Image (cartoon, helix red, strand yellow):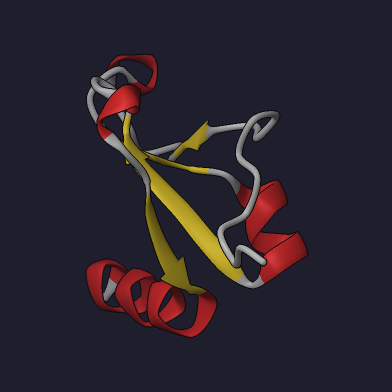
Length: 68
């Protein structure tokens, strides 16, 4: 059994702080994060390059750090 979430129908979202409509940033799939507790992250310029799956606690720590 795979623990990797199915990202086929994920809705990817860019930060509201991203310039240029999110064309040059990291994007996340909050619907998957809510369902699994794992935050999928990928590069908006190269989505086929792969997805990093970050446990929610570590993602929250990262976000707190960069917004501080």
